[in-house]
Length: 93
Length: 129
Image (tube, rainbow over all chains, first blue to last red; front, side, top):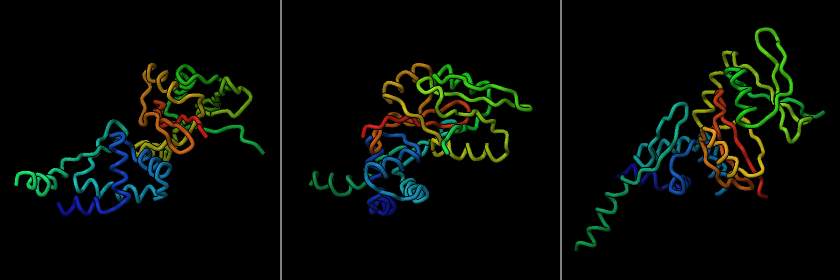
C-alpha cells in the first residue's frame, strides 16, 4: 500500500490516471500529448516515462506489448485495499 | 528557400508505394531507378505541385533502430493534414489500417496515429482552432 500512496502523492501521476480513465490503453506518445495539450504539463517524455514506472511499480498501471507497440492500461485493483480498510469497515460498524 | 521534399524511411519501397497511393490516397509523382533502389515520391492530389514525400529506403543500419524505438513509444515522426480526422479514421480503418491512437482532441487539433505498415507511425490531424 505504501507504493500506491507514493504513486498517488504526485499530481502528474494522478493526471496520468485520469487520462487513462478517459481512454484506457495509450502509448507513451499519447499520454505525453494529453498531459501537454489538455493540462499544460510540459514534462519531458523521459520524466513521464519515469512517472509511469512508479505507477507500474504500484500496480496502478500495466503495460502491454502488442506487436511493435507498447500500451499502458490502468488497473484500479490496488485501490481496493484502501476502500476495504477504511470505507467499507466504517460501513460495517 | 522552400520545402520541396520530406521523407519517410520505408522497409520496402514497392509496398510503401502501394500503401501511400492505394490506401492513403497520394499520387505517384517521381519513380526512377537510382542504383539498387528507386527515387520515389508521392504528392497530395489536392496539391500536386506541393511538397513531395520521398519513400526513402531504411537500409542504413541506424534507421531500423531509430524507427523501432519511435514506434515502441507510439511516436509519429510525420504528420498529414486531413479535412476530418474522425471520417478519415473511419475510412482507413475500413481498409484495415491499424491505429495506435484513436482520434482525440489535442489542444488546437484533433489527431489520430496510424501504422503505415512500412515501419512508421503517421499522425493525421485536423486543426480546429
